[in-house]
Amino acid sequence: LMAGRSGLPALVPSDQQSQLSGQYLNLLTGEPFDLSELEGKTVLFDFWATWCSPCIAEIPKLKELVVKFGDSFVLVSISSDALTKGRDKAGVRDFMEEHGINYMVLFDDPEQSLTERFGVVGWPSKFLINEKREFMKHPTAKSGGTVSLEEVEAYLASLY
Image 1: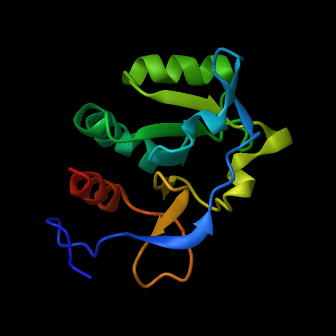
Image 2: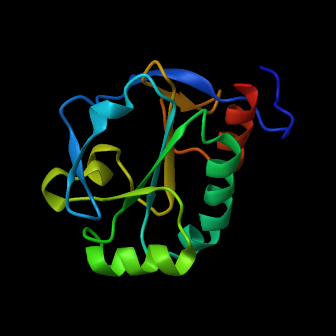
Image 3: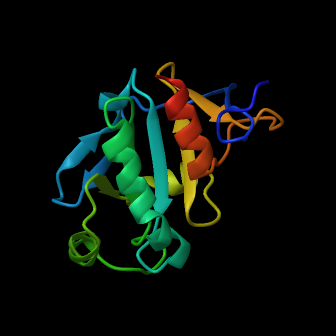
């Protein structure tokens, strides 16, 4: 496989498919968001928490990706604060305002935890799903797994 301009090996589709149909998470307003609305789109799921220093350090880069590639993908940022004894919804909303977050943030619900379903064991964790619902992965990985922001940026750049 050719490395992208970044020098990283290009991400490839895995045989693992995402199941988004019939799954809901709450927006910070409390309204449900139907994940099936994301079908047919390239989606970056970003699992983070307000107490996570590396997560906070990535916010400027995530904002930049949304501005640069916003037409090519959807960033779904999932706050794991409810699962990790972090802030409540109001606290996460305040955090978003403080940091000028310009993308969708969902609040993971302990009842139907996407964090658990994706197998997140550390923060931040990112999963990239292409428009065919395939998890993208490192060429040497056996199945879809977490990807870096640099790999995501190289993949999105390759779509142009």
